[in-house]
Amino acid sequence: MTEHHLTTPLSRDDIKQLEAGDIVYLSGTVYTARDEAHLRILELTDEGKPLPFDLEGAAVYHCGPLMQQEDEGWRAVAAGPTTSARMTDMTPDLLDNYNVRAIIGKGGMKDIAPVLKDRCVYLAYTGGCAALAVDMITDVKGVHWLELGMPEAVWVLEVKDFGPLVVGVDAWGRDLFGEVMERAGTAFDKNI
Image (cartoon, rainbow, N blue to C red):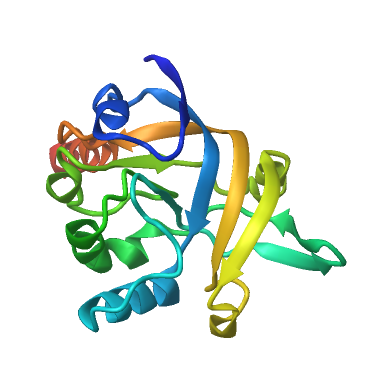
């Protein structure tokens, strides 16, 4: 297990140095995106329309943050990960159209390793850490599609040493979540 400190935008070389089980701390810009944001991204893509933000080398955080509006903009109050499994079916199209290099979330994504291979990693963040995550958000740089609702909008977060994030699925095809499920199934079968 190796510890990495990376800055967005991420390159393919950045993610190829990561192995499942490594620890990552991210700095730079991170975009939140849940179900509705993924749908909007893919709708605009299908229509040939540009996105109002740049996903080249991006880190997409499966998160529905709680924000507070202030005179100078927005402040993050809570920003924990949401369950990534809901975005599994939309991820292939997202990665086929944009060079997203990291997905951050919780719980993993079933059978996602072949989709991520050679182009993206899945970084697991511990659920229940919504208040702690706020300490690593240095600025809320903007928001897109607020009409989708606060948790579903795309929030542009500036982060410093955001983590620890565990490489749950690396760009080499190793999936820690899948391995745990396989071992659990084997153990279950042996106990029958």
